[in-house]
Amino acid sequence: MKKKTGMTNLNKKNKLNISIIICAYKNTPILKLCLEAIKEKFSGNFKFEVLVIDIEANEKNRDLVLEDFSEFRYIPLKNNVGFAKALNYGIKKSGGFIILSLNPDIIIKKDSIEILYKYALKNKNLGILGPKLLNFNGSRQVSAFNFYTPLTIVYRRTFLGRSFFGKKSLKKFQVKVNDKKPNKIKGWLMGSAMMLRRDNLEKVGLMDERYFMYFEDVDWCRRFWESGFDIVYHPKAKMFHYHTKMSASKSIFSLIFNKMTFIHFLSGIKYFWKFKGWKVKKKTKKS
Image 1 (tube, rainbow, N blue to C red):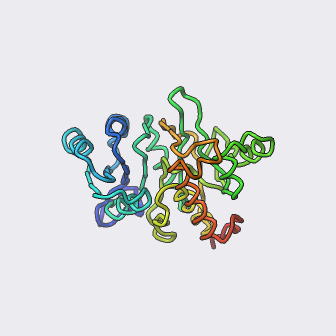
Image 2: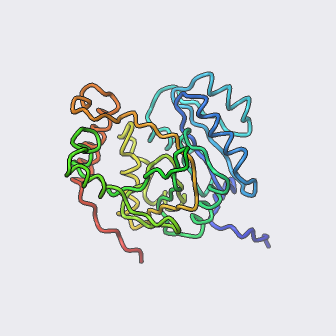
Image 3: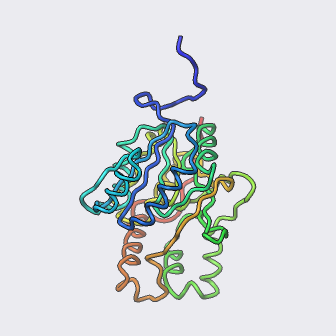
């Protein structure tokens, strides 16, 4: 008779509790801080693996991982395939039942992964779980949002966001959260830090690779929501996030001259076209 471990639904092949997947794109100093935090602050009580997916691989990232973090897996990608495709590749290469996707500009705080892991393992209807993101001065970053409407994009990316109606709309765009307990929301979580269960992921599917950048996290949360799974913001798990909005611009001309804003705009079109508008279906009830 096999000895019970107290853990259920583990990946049968590797028996790993957690796979941490980091999709890096250049910026070696930031990646180093992320990996150091995982090495120093994540408990060794779990069987886990760390996969560094190096998009448009470079020597600095390769040398950093292979020399300073040899216990982590380094997976180079020759071309810039976009975040969704890179993360999907990492998920396919991973073996953990619980999957944690982290941007390289995330610095975990002590016990943050453990808190998320315990919640994910306990809650079988979990779709996507996210932590409380912090600025480096300790203030909270807004990371839980209602689903987009076309006007939301216009207000966020142009000077119209400073108008009365723009301010009112953007305020409603943010989800009001309870800072003392996990929040189940009808909306989406910023894709900088996302935890999922592999069993539910297999039911909903991987990220949509048609998005090169932006909206892949919105799309994923919406698919999980409409499939009846929970989207949860967990304020007790805290992580620092060095967040820079490459697409941020307040000029209407940014849609033409700012590359990142233009990509954001195109991703928004793909999103609304795919879902035939912005009205979100009612959450499917689980039997």
